Amino acid sequence: MDPDDPNHNHIHAYPYSNGKYDFDEWNDAFWTRFRDVARAARDRDIVVNVSMLNVLIARFDRFKTPFDKNDNGGQIFSPKRDGDLQPEWYDLDYSENGVTLRSKQQALIDKTLAELDSFDNVIFEIQNENGHDIASVEDASAFQNYWAAHVASKTSRLVMVHAHHGANQHTKGVEHYWDESYNDILNFHFYPKRKLGSLDMVSNLLHPVQSKGKVLFDNEGWPNRVPETGAVDYRNLNASTRHNWAMFTSGGYGAFFNLSRHDGGIGDSAWEVIAKRLTVQRNIVETVRFWEMSPVDEHGNEIDNLVHNGPGNEWQVIANLGNEYLVFFCGSKGSNDVEIDLPPGNYNFVFYSAENGTAMGSGSIDGGPRRALRSPRPHLWNGEVGLVLTIIRDASR
Image (cartoon, rainbow, N blue to C red; front, side, top):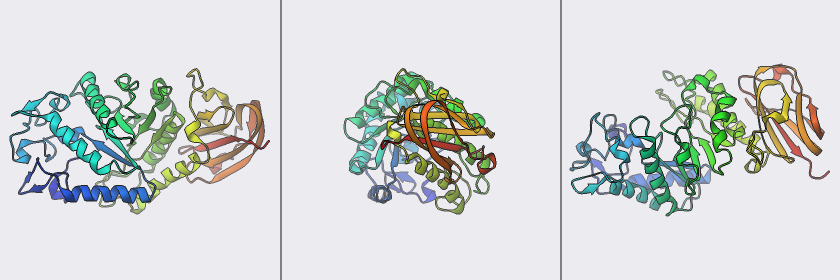
């Protein structure tokens, strides 16, 4: 739902001709195409994340946007101090010439819901990197919560908010979102990349929300292409892979950001390499009942200390205690076996490469304290990408 330069040959929610948007009509071609995309995605078991009221729409200085009176041929809305419409974008009472900004925002939201709510593979997101330093945490969160409640009142689909202020390695403002029943998904963008791939960074940031009963998500990650050529940036890809596993073992979900100035894009050879990493993660994760697993125990304490040793010097654990466990290892490799505490019972285990999904050893083990599992030899896996261990209780014994 982002704005863009019409000269890029995109089609838009509002009709565009002679250099102006018609702010009072809808572009049927846009909505037909949007439904076609949602339908094609559903046929391929793909979830569509629809981001509404993206603050970029208010960046009149960067984009042609129907909310700018210079681009809509009308009398609303006027660029402000830096050529944009911020912080007014977050003011639910702001109006010009008798027209409230809220009425135009609601029209766009309600039209989107009317067109896409019938698709069961759609989630609706309010905002993207809200506020930054332009609006206060209080104003930005009040804005998002208002519209999230509105959307939730009109749909049974999941509703997502960007749950921290702007983007960076912090969760500033998350407390304004975590207790609201209409916020199903809390989204984060943990930029910049200086600590990308750090298990502890992600775990520490998400720990305060791990027991709030929300879906946790980072729906961008970090670009994994060389901007000038579009080629795979393997250093970033490896770090992004670790970041996504850190998100999962912290109780969340992750994604990759496909961004390149190169002519290549979705479906080219670099994209296939990058997408394969996500496929590998999904395939491994779906060997366990991940929706029943948690990174914390009943008291909210993280369970990483169930593992005492392992083949990598960094690890994180997520589990349905006594039934299923997943451990992600990365970092400096060694020949140490895994030592893990397991309740009584018999368990089957498998090691997987996080790089290509190859099963690298399997077996069974009885429960008990500091049980030892033979690790794959160090040269068989990439410490920059990671090694995954799944342990599943054998219910037949």
